[in-house]
Length: 473
Image (cartoon, rainbow, N blue to C red; front, side, top):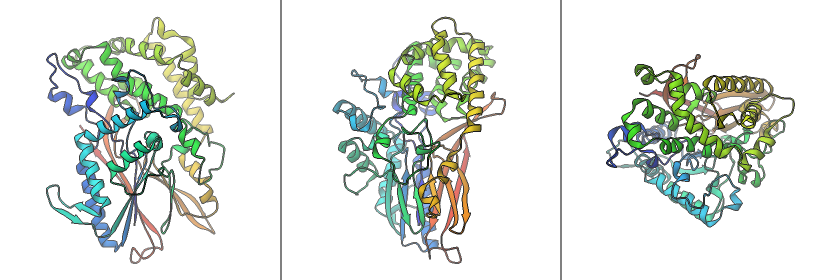
């Protein structure tokens, strides 16, 4: 029995909490800023897997954590206690002692989060073929021998950077597979499954563009070592925005203002937004603002200094400029064109009217649509996998997009082959078609593959796919 989950995105949250004028951290701050999935969700998963292993008569269970388990990018610690200004968007082969210590510190802070600490304990327990049937119950013996596997994704790309970082991750997960580099792809023969994280299918989050190329099963290590455009955006935009907001407004002021506190919460959560092109609407359509008599223009005025400071910081950044040039495709409109036009205009250094931002948003949205018409989704990348084209394996499994998905790749003399996307275990925020309303949902997705003889009456190889969505407040 083979189980795959991905995109757990364990995060360091402590640095995001606000303090009032007395330095106290009120209930509001601790209750609403949580993004880590409760450990109870993983305990329930392991209990369910134990029951399923018993029902199927499995002698062995392999559980693969297929990337983006540790979110090393999405933390404001990159902007605190960092006098050398180190950043994670460097090659894994160029990580010096200062950056290594910063990464180790972020991992330690992440593991100290209550839900993360308890979740990691559940995985360590499972790696020893033990589990908890009830939250307060005794440890139980898992009905099959368990092996835990870990694949780095784009948000934990530096997991392979140094032996100290690898050792720390192995300790956190309870892995006992030596000290060599973590594999980027795993293959199983029974059942026939190929597993990646899936950022290999994303030109913004992988160092090499495979949009028009077939994918060999083993890609060069350097392509995994090198940073991607998304690394920079996650750190310098997604993680930086909340930090800039707190530099502009005092914590106590944010806590005392419904409009400011809601804006801060949305800045913390916006990278969970789908589609991310709805960011401006997500920030401006705040119910508490309208109840307080604030217009969208009023809200935008509160964001202008943050946006201006951010753009001043990144507009001349060499990493960004190099990647924009590399991503640009001549005679083909795409989001990169919109970004380049905006950065070249320098309009943010003076007046920043909301209507101009609306124009830029529409330009970007149109570019995304145009690009979507010319490029393919992850299932098309999966169809170009060397293993699929040669007839084996039956399944290509990847996560990364946070979009649960099952697609038939081929049906021919070699049999049927599927692409399975394992979704995410973190929160997802969706918008209405008009982009005026937003709601948070919890993602819970996993896939179970059964080998020959593990399911009575089933095909030689079969799979169960589970996509659970939970409503949040």
